[in-house]
Amino acid sequence: MGPAELLVLTFPQETITAAAAQALVKLRTAGDIRVIDSLVVTHAADGGTGYGELADYEQLRDLVGEGGEQLRLIGPEDAQETAALLEPGTVALLVLIEHVWAKEAAEALRAVGGRIATGVRIPPEHIEEAVRAAAGR
Image 1 (cartoon, rainbow, N blue to C red):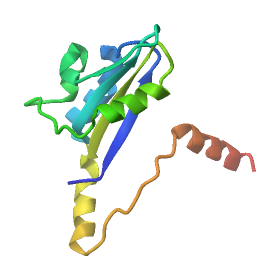
Image 2 (image 1 turned 90 degrees about the vertical axis):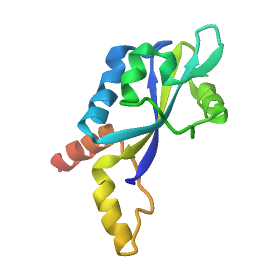
Image 3 (image 1 turned 120 degrees about the vertical axis):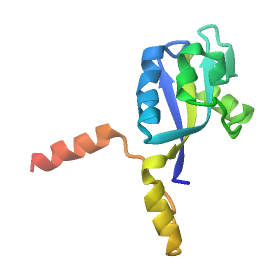
């Protein structure tokens, strides 16, 4: 298995649109990622919160792919924690993914006793800012 990562993707409306889900669907179908588990968390404008599986959202079913089965690793406590962070009137998609593109590298590391110990996600805005700063020298 390649490295895995839990992503929390937020959207400024109460439901995830099909258009918003298409970027992840493209990554999954290209073979770059495998969706291991996922959960949709909502924080309604009236303050109510809830969560549901992808199967509950027709526009998100393509994220799961063939067979439609996922491991159940993201639970109610993850949903509650995420809902507490969301602004009213927004929604989040929690996605546990395997980075399939890195699987061979991870296997090669394990074969020689190594492992991927950690990773740090750097937002693209920070990279762009650093590039602009470096160019301005």
